[in-house]
Amino acid sequence: MSLVVGVAAALLQAGGGPLQGAWRVTCDVAASPVQQEPRQPRVFRLAPRTLQEWSPVSKDFGPNLCGVFVCTTDGGRLEGTITTASMILTIAADPAARQATWRIKGASASGRSSGACTMEPERSQPNAAPPGE
Image (cartoon, rainbow, N blue to C red):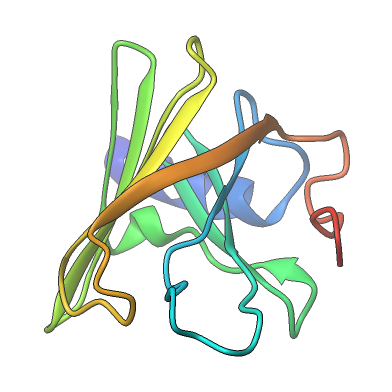
């Protein structure tokens, strides 16, 4: 019964107010050096048991991906992994060091397999648009 309550609480928390210990992580995952048009970086909200991606269309963070993908917290380090049939994308952050990275295994539009991300603490309005939108 407590597992069901924990899952329900995590899903409710994902759509609610500010998350304790949440970070906005911005990664240039799909950029290609030969790409002609500018591509927008992907923005994620990363917190313990929470990984959400910003949708520029709905101007909101999507559902908590930790409900269906692997998310871990180890010694203060946060990590979320999105797995598809053709690739594995991992977003990782070390809040103490203020460093974040992405890495991809499998299909990649740019040919790059990893890179640095920027990170900032979640603001008091969790669904406020990322800078530049």
